[in-house]
Amino acid sequence: MKDERDSSLIQEFKQGDEKAFNQLVLRYQKRVYDLTYRLVRNHEDAADLSQEVFVRAYSNLRKFEERSSFYVWLTRIAVNLCINFSKRERFRSFLSIFDISQKPEVSVSPEEDVEKEELRRALDRAVKSLPERQRATFVLKRYQELPYREIAQIMEISEGAAKANYFQAVKKLQKLLGQYR
Amino acid sequence: MKCKDVSPLLIEYQENSLRPEERGVVEKHLRQCDVCRKEFKEIERLYQLLAKERVPSPEESFWTNFLPEVRARIEEKKKTRGLFFPRPRLVVGVLTVLTVAIVTVFMFTSDQRSLVELRSEQMEEVTLSAPELSSTTEELAEILSAGGEVSLSILLANGEERQLDLIEGILEEDYLSQLSLNSVLSELDTEELKKLEESIKALHIGEIL
Image (cartoon, rainbow over all chains, first blue to last red; front, side, top):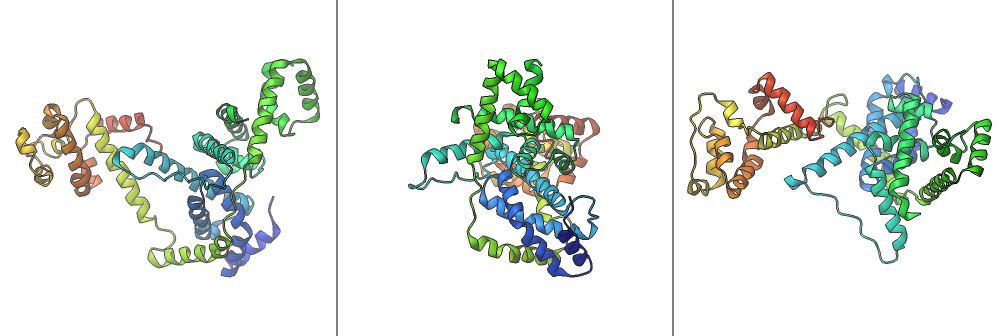
């Protein structure tokens, strides 16, 4: 559903008001960060990618025709960026024989609850093991609470395929996280 | 309703997204079927687990700096190359990945054809002895980059582990840095390109390229 305030800011931006774009960033920065974090599962990359989402949005906003809501459009940019990022990460792991450095695991501080930390890592591993598009569908449905219709728009697939992706993701997580219940 | 019909509905039942009539059917089935009840309990536990996870909140300064950093990136792009040009880092990245993939495939394909072989049909094959190989990597890199003076396939065929390591080192450090992707690809014929593409796909990297 289109948001009137968004539409008005987009029109102002298209008419040359740069500050209107700032308002759009401020409105959606937390939601976009949350989405990118859920997809890449670490702060450093999520911070970088969420900022990049807005840079891409700025480049293309004049061409945006509002056939979907601004947030759905922004989410599509974020998902595509994160999918490409995750593929590159997977490829870097594959090329580790060429001595490409891996990110170190985050260390657990003494006061951190070991059980929670263990669960977090298990969730990280499980979610990261999902194929990129399945992972994106899962995050959009489970955490962004988007309907299948919008997920289908974002992922450029049918609603049926979005639903199937989500079910497969849940089944896989169920299998991978069985021991942590 | 049978188990095979109910099972796909259990996730939506958990999410309260079924129509009332479907919900009623699933509830009735769950009261009668131990297997589906167990499956539903597992789904319920997974959702409880997922609900425990929270995205850690970044420090307040992250949010304060967010917009200025986005603005700085936009200005930087405007200054350097405009917003609508492809990013050089991306282009370099793709070229590097392609080059490494090509060399990897060449190193492991059955006929072990060398890039040097492809570069020159007039080359003269020379087999280097172990003492010659033990000279500096720079020397051998020079031979390779000169083209047409040594067959890498011969080195690989006769090679011992030390020699292969040496060649691998050269390929990574020197040869790759001197090769342009275009020059490599332009030397391949249709069949070789097809073979290369199949090999890359077999390595599960095709979708990235």
